[in-house]
Image (cartoon, rainbow, N blue to C red):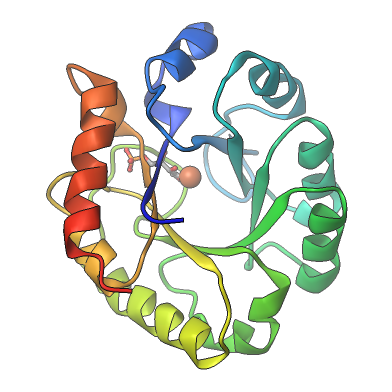
Length: 221
Ligand SMILES: O=C(CO)[C@@H](O)[C@H](O)COP(=O)(O)O
Ligand SMILES: [Fe+2]
């Protein structure tokens, strides 16, 4: 599949989401951060807006659920039109069941890990997922500084995927910019979320291509 860029609409203008999606027409995905003010100290949007955006945007939606009780809510995001649904390991009580429900409804299932959550406890259930999302900031807000301490986990995750002969994508999210994307691509990431770097750029689409080129030039796997 190669390098994929997923602009996060968290830094976009929420009153003009359809236009903001069109402004990143070169992007592979539109990353939608769902926050419930419980799992993270911030509140964004939920099912009705995802349903409208799925109809209005040309790109598939990559929904990142930063919510409590994803077991209950995650399958509904597929019904709302998401093509990929990511839930947090720290919030989930039944990751295998929830991943299977997401897949059964026709979307990609992904497991997200906060910076201090290791990948190793999930080694035996990697095959239940299409993607692992490794957070490179504490979830909750856009525009935070990239946490370098998360890079070794990208590498270890890529090694575990190879060890089991699996075909999972590794997505990274938080503080991704022209300064930080290359070290993540080198470590084995292939899907890159970027919010402030893309939406604060003079031309969001040009930034998408710049990020894609930087990552592609150093990718080894
Ligand atoms: O999930 C989150 C934040 O919790 C992200 O998707 C951010 O929206 C990324 O924003 P930048 O760090 O790229 O500005
Ligand atoms: Fe996100």
